[in-house]
Length: 464
Image (cartoon, rainbow, N blue to C red):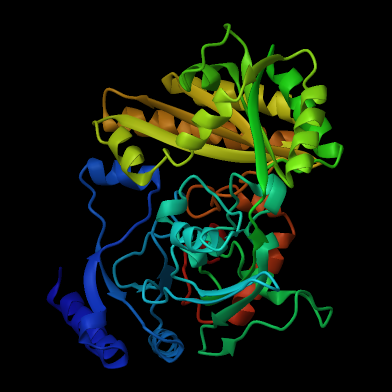
C-alpha cells in the first residue's frame, strides 16, 4: 500500500471513530459467499482490507452516511454476509456498515400479529423467539441460521414455506430506513395504506443501494395446529409439475411443496426407480383442514406412487443442510466449482426451462434441479451445478459457461433470471435485459435518493 493511500485510510478511520467510537471501527477483508469470489481467493487473489464501522443507533447511522456523502466514500450495509451473488464485495477505499448491533426484537404483538424488530436480528433466532409463543414469521430460507432481517429484505428473500406465507415482501408492513443524506423514514401506521405508493417496497431487493434499513415491522402468524406431510414418486417432471399446478390452482396453500428431478431425487438418497421424480409436500392448519387438504393433494397426485411420511420427515431433518460451511468445503479443492441458480417461470415454460438449463449447466457433471416456491401462475426452478477443472482458469471457464447458458435460456424463454438470491455481480450483465425500461426507473430512483452514489455500488447491476 502506498504511503498516500495509507494516510487517507488512517484519516478516514480517525473521522469514523469520532462518530461511532474507537472500538466500533476495525479493518478486515469483507465479502459475501459468492462462489466466484471464493474461487478468486483460493487462487491467491485476496480481498482488500476494508474499514468496517459498527453503529449502535440511528443517529450514528445518519452521521456515517452524511460523512460518506461529503467525502464521496461508498458505503455498503452488511447483515450476516450470507448472500451468494457478490453484492457485498467492497473495494479498497470503501466502507462497510456492519448492522450487527441492531439486534433487538422490540415488540411481539400477539393480538394484532405484528412483530417490530431491528435489522440485525438473526432470522433463526427471531423464528425461535416467535415459536416459543406459538407464532411464526413463516420465512425459512435454507440459509436461515446465517441471515439477518435486514439481509433478507435487501436480497428480496423467499423461504421454503413461501407458498403458504409468501416471501419477505409479503411479510413487510413497514420499514425504518436512513437515507444517504441522513433523512430518517419511519414505518407508516396500519396494516395497509392508500396514501400514495408503498415506498418502503423500493428497499426490498435493493441490495443496500438506496439506504440503510435499521428496522422492520413484520406480519406474523400463529403456528398451525397440525401438519400432514408425505411424499410421492412421479414418472417424470411433467407429471409432477402438473400435480403442483393443480394443487395451487385449487386454492390449497401447502406449507411445503418441492419436486425433485430424477438426478436430484437420486442425489438426495431416495430409493426410487431410475427416472422417477420425488414430490415432498405438507399441508398445515387446523387438524381437520390439514387432513382435508392432504387428501385433496393425494387426489391430484393420482397415478403417482405414494411414499408415506418418510420423505417429509427426512426433508425436515435436512432443511438447513445447505450451509455456508458446506459451500466453503465444496469449494476448497483447487479447480472445484459449485453454485446454484434459481429462476422462476410460468407452468407452461418450466419443462423447457428445465431441459435447457440442465443442458447448459451440465458441463462439469453435477446438474440438479428442484421446483419449489409455487404460485398459481408458476414456480421457482432451483438448479445446482458443479464440477472441476485441471486448472483454476479451466474451472472459471466452465463456471462462466454454465451461468451464460442458464441466463440465456431464462431470457429466451421468458423466465426471470433470479427468484430470491438477488443480482449483485453474478447477474449484473443480464439484469437490464430482464428489467427493460424499468432499469431506467431504478436508475432514476437511485439518482434521486442517492445523487452522490455513496450507497453500495454493486447493487442491482451496479451504479451506471
